[in-house]
Length: 72
Image (cartoon, rainbow, N blue to C red; front, top):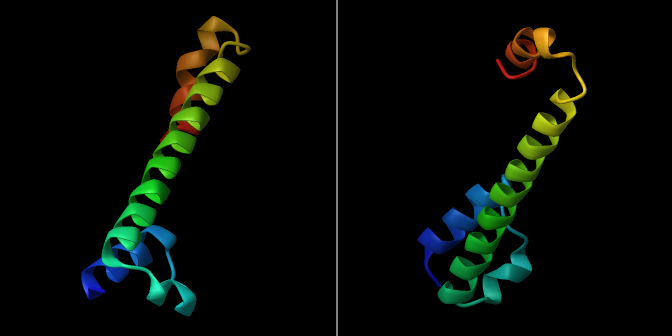
């Protein structure tokens, strides 16, 4: 197992990985880190879409200023 794969996984988790993950192969660790990254991107995209949909409820003249306030 490489330290690079553990380091990448640690970055994705935002914390040191649990010791039990030390038994995984380098390919498994890389796959897990990749899956976490893709899920994070998917959730961020979903939140962006939800925010844009919510802005549709704001009157048209106020959307620009509200968007600037919310998404600095």
